Length: 461
Image (cartoon, rainbow, N blue to C red; front, side, top):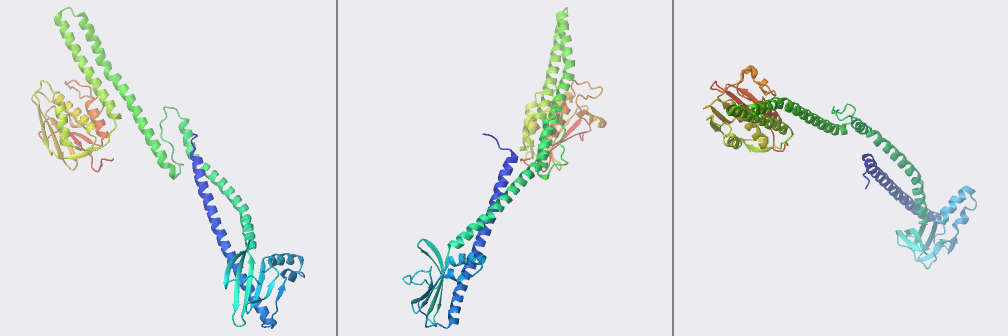
């Protein structure tokens, strides 16, 4: 089935409403006019009856009336032709009868005979020989006179038809003009959307710049805004993908070169001892390359993974992360401790927050010396927070912002690493709107990493 365009949908909808509104107004106007016409014709019937009584009273024949008939058409024979035609038309739709003491004494030639009794007083409607009549009956009890004035309703019906035909032409013309103006208005109104579609269609795949909203109508601003936000997300995703490829190429080049050299040394080693040393170095290089690959994959995954919020118990989250990562400091006999509020919660993404804490614990284990201590605290300091303290060498205050850059390592650092751990932590924290900061623990030794979870976020955000 062919899909209707937005332009056509709007036109059909508004056109239907416009046509219905115009016809509804027209029906109301016509019915109001019909009511006015009916009241006017009824008033004429009353006037005719009163004039008839006035003429009889002025003639002085009341009480001495004899039965007679009046040809209404003959009364207008002497009128000018243009007036005669109108009067004849009026006469053909009128009839009257006069009753005295229950006896028909006067009538128009087109009125019913005496055998048809007078109608009830006031207005009444009858059908005689298939012709509808409107009757007004007036009685004068003093002289025992009854006046009956009749109107053939075909005249009203003809007037109604003429009125309908008279308004049909202008109505059709008005609707034609309205619908044409409506179509042009919709076409002009959607021109900005058409322009934006053409602009997007003509762009290259590398052009993700935002759409120009300076001339967009108010109704399209949310649409353009959503498109610009989508373009920005695509730009960031593509930039992140390129960064990942650059990072992977940069970081894997060295360990792969070392692995190749270690393999060659192991092949050429003249003795078993030298071969074992080369193989041990090769294993160390493989472990380093594996760690780098794992961190790079984590970095890429943290930027693309969905992050729906949920209410998370921070103490349980920290406890689970410690349990998962407690096997990392092999042979270092590091003491692990968890302290704080066991009921503290925050709205965050549990999976990404667990990765974040795991990265920070891995970093703390890596730099904490043997028999050192790593302490995780769950506290509320204005905002829900998790703090990780270690007893390692710490980081100088002037370097604490730089260490969040990718591949940045402190000069003279002897602990092997890729410089990606804190960069990954920073990226995940920004994704979850968590404030991450570095400081020196109150003991004056080591490093404290603070994670401050946001306030005011609901689970639906």
